[in-house]
Image (cartoon, rainbow over the protein chains, first blue to last red):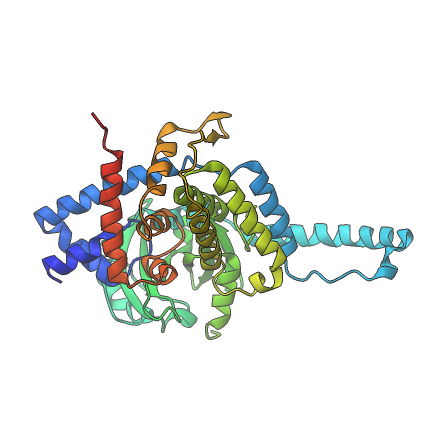
Amino acid sequence: MNLETARQYLPLYRPGKPMDQKILKAVRYAECHESLREELGWQMDFDDQVVEVIHFIRPPENLRQKLAELSQRMAPGKKPVRKNLFNPAILSAIFGVLLLLGFGVYLKLESDKDFPGKKWATDLLELNDKMTGAELDATKLPAGQLTDNMMLRGFDRFALPTELAELPAIGWRVFRFSGNKVAQIAIEKPGSGGEGHGMVVFVFRASDFAVRPGPDGAWKVFDHEHWAAAATERGGLCTLLCFHGTTHDMEEFLHTLKKP
Amino acid sequence: MQTAALPNVTLAEFYRFALLLTGNIKTAEQIMADTLSEVESQLSEFRHEANRQAWLASRIRQRCLRENSGGGTPAPRLLRDEESGGILKIEAFIVAQHVSTLPEPHRSALALFYLEIFTPEEIAKLLKVSIDDLAGLLAHARQLLATAMEPRP
């Protein structure tokens, strides 16, 4: 990385966004270079101001309403209703059964989304938005082979779920969150072709934050703001996996992983 | 509750995008409504679209550019602020107006960059430019916007 290359890539930088390594390198270079640091500071300040201002722009209610209707129609699994089902008696019976089923499904979905300690998990997700990427140490190791690195930084007995162990890590760190140690790994999402579509994994002791995603080691999928996340607890360690996307994206991604 | 298909936060981002590209609240609302109608009419295709957000951004941008090429500068309109029920912060209006006057593809590059949705690589792909060119566009767009927003004597 030299001055010219760093200056070329700096305009692509925005804190909190998933970034390609070359952009992060440019930022690290700029931080050690007086004039570039000044340019980057101006840029970040300018962007912050513009973004803050444009966030006052909100869509009107009629568009939200239209979106809500559209989203309902996009829910999968809708089948065309046959004509002979329009008999009022049959409709009433079906409606009653559906109401009961719907309520049961609703309760199940709601209980599936929430788990003890979820607030800590969402706090960690929000932490991603405040990061520049420069906080992480670069690595080319598979994520599962960072045990020694983590131990040297004070996170003993670090382990990842086996299905994540082979994923290529691009950065890592150990930091304290509310007084407890948390390991964080940035991973290149499989299939992104190195195009900067990253994901982040947090590992911490479940007992430190009383996070209990579930007793059976299964992934608990949920979303928070623009983050899709999945959490699991195995051997006393809680693993929180996240990337920008939807719960549907996360479920699809988890299906692509090798079974433990 | 947000839906997985089209979260409300995404709608807000795309609405901002349309407003930044057109600088006109009425036009932006119309473009968003038309785009949602298009989604409605092509629901099965959209449901299977691998990158729905890129699809939406591309459609909204096409509509905005078509609208802008219609000639004439859109009359400034005051924006609503739902929370106060009054007028949107004047700064937001001014920024949207200034962004909408930037040349293409600088305007689209900057507007997409300020959304919380796309990575630089995705923006470059959407605009069909290289990542190096996108960096140049963003640098130039920021300068143009900063100059436009400087107070005039």
